[in-house]
Image 1 (cartoon, rainbow, N blue to C red):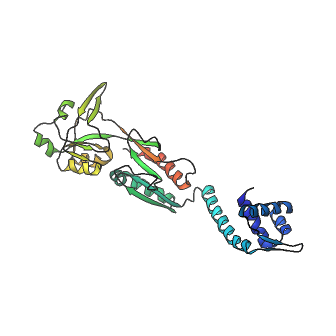
Image 2: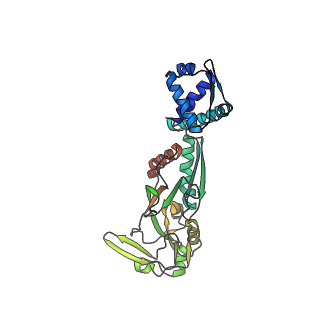
Image 3: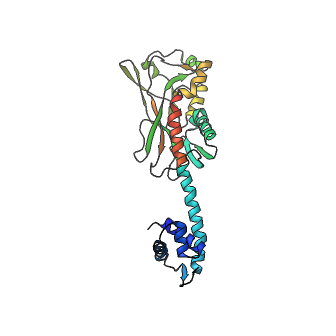
Length: 296
């Protein structure tokens, strides 16, 4: 039998002091009321009512159970509200992504989401290493890459395009401006530790070239790679969302603009689809809808 329904019947009997009156109030038979109470007593291994031919009264165990059942049923009602009212979301969502992406893009998207759902709290954790979603109790992660761990569920929301950039200061220190893929191998590359790649595949039409990236600066943080380029240390492949302003101002220059660099998938990552909270599902749907509107 349904334990939630049994609790409702129990409270009705406790309130009316009568199996018959409880049955009438619930529009069920007196025999069914009796079966629900017997079911609860068998489950809890206690007697809940003192029964005589004239009246029904709560035992001491029954008196204790009244408050507990009320609390449980109130909680069930609140859970039902989350299920039935997706437009009135509440609760907390823990989300993580890289420092650079949080500042440049995600913060704005989360602000838009909270304007739609002001009762939802956002806990944004920024880290440029892959956070353990289970141990750190993370609901969602925004991750960059074309492969995601098999144990996780990933949904691609966009792609990230990049450019090879450096500064005029660094070019002057070289004494030449690279115009071919082969000449790139003479440069000092600033590389991203998370990808752990030593070669860069670039293409122009049907022509592809493999560029060996040799350099003296490696970081797990794209923002620090950006600063290293800004400080004239070398050349780096950086995402468009991070460098567009510097290119427009002439502070960065793009190398080999006619050659295409690999694109990187941007994914929403989570641990399970089963029993996903309504607020988390709403945020996923929001990001899937809004992310493609941004040029990344």
